[in-house]
Image (cartoon, rainbow, N blue to C red):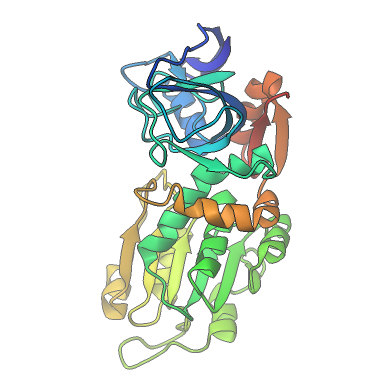
Length: 339
């Protein structure tokens, strides 16, 4: 079968590999859709992930159909539609340095157990929306790390896939007012469609002044000046101005979550952080959220579908990787396999 691999530093290509076979304790999946992640470009840039340097199979945001089940496996049926915990494979992280990747026609789940690597979903959920399960789990973990309380006022910086997923996650956790901040008008319009209460164009608006207008004045005896009444901030943008802005405008006791990857060191005002007693939390992966978020995707799949900006066929997987790696060219690229 065909599979997309990192073939060297800065290069990806098609590789012919053996089609996997399900053993007695395994489940064979036919991949039906797979999202492209920013980390795919990182793996390509560095030439793979040891020990598969230069030969890393890609694809870790799959949705799949079960096509074969080992004799010792129970809890599944051929034809089931499933979402996948790519971190629970026994042969390494799927598409992130393990033996297999989901930009392939088939993937075998070894030692398969219901609720561990796979969860069955309704067949009416579109494949490309089901493939959002993995990145939406990343977003929901970021929400959980900031521990929002019922009624909190929230700001999400960055209206990319993770930021929009976090918007839905904060709504699920009971936030009373959610603002999304970005530079791109089309992204801000999408945030409103998905459910943001307000948006701020940081290229043309004063973020601090608008947040005071939207969330109230958060100045107090602890912190004076322009302080917003926002309870929780999430950095899903990965630009240095975001944490610096939060440190300057956060009210006393606010929380800042960092889920974005900052590729350069960030200069930070520790004095402002200290006086505000700003809580800073960090988020990576999804220790528990991979199947927790599935319920919300099933219930609200039409909203999640808005996150996807481009759908390309499997035959154009290399184009999909290039498109996703081009700054400003796309928001969320998903590869969809033929029926």
